[in-house]
Length: 154
Length: 284
Image (cartoon, rainbow over all chains, first blue to last red):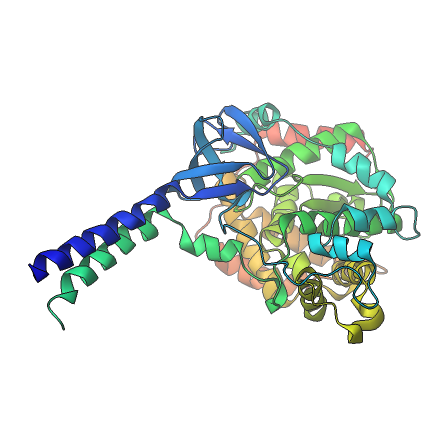
């Protein structure tokens, strides 16, 4: 009887681990393409935004097969996902601590962010105007595909 | 061992190894969550993006930008081709590549994926594969988060304290969030433009660049040929060539070793044609 119970306990333990297959992950980049295959040049099934939750189905090397919030299945590169399942606690963060304004505390809660950049804009030593031009310089996947094909690249 | 515990232990170990180790890339998770500079605070992707934007804006206040659409289109397509095959194809705001109007030969990567090369360095390259080798090296720094590692560890610790709400009275001015941000930017630009990365970081970036060139189908030996040209250019009077990098001769040694057995590729006509066209657009 006792022997059966210990095997039963083992079975329960095994079943308790199964839900990890469907572990949630969050998109950590501004936008990520959900791809049909584990290849950057494969077709885009959907575009996911930062913070969207996906269910992890399996991994293939650096690629993660996921189920998107709309139910579609596809691949995301590991570098687009936060699999850690949470951030450091912000408990104890109290506005008005000595030497710190409420605004600063709010900013600190988010770490370095747009608020810091806004304060830098217009100050000497930072050229955000030209940076905006740089940030508009993008290329499409179709262009990259053509570039690879014509240049006999992989 | 207690015979009652044995089945429990066997099933636990089996289930752990099959479910966790096969389905979950623990090694990569650990890498992705690695702490920067050995400090107690991980810099998020979003923070890296905003730090990178400020670093790039700081660089752009010191160097003029060359806004030629033909060359920029070519450079960004070439850079994206490499970034797509790298170990970190996804960065918060995407990769961006730009050309600085400076005769000083240099290449710089701001955190988060803004990569600059100078006209002086472009002049030194003579093929698309050599230009790809330069960019692959910079992408390798982004993959390794090397620019972020230039932030002094005490600042990262202070940032950790800020976000945890432990703002210390004793921190005084250095505890100010904006000072922390600006000082972090200066740590990085100081490293990028003057101090340089460690020799170990540069070696890792060179070796990662070789792997990336192989992965994309570019000639890995192009890194060696461009290093030789950099060495040659450095010998010229008043030359300012990759001043924040270790001497090219030193880098050539381990690059040559990593390329042992590699047969240099014959230059592809299409690559030659588009590289020349892009350079011509700049009058080079």
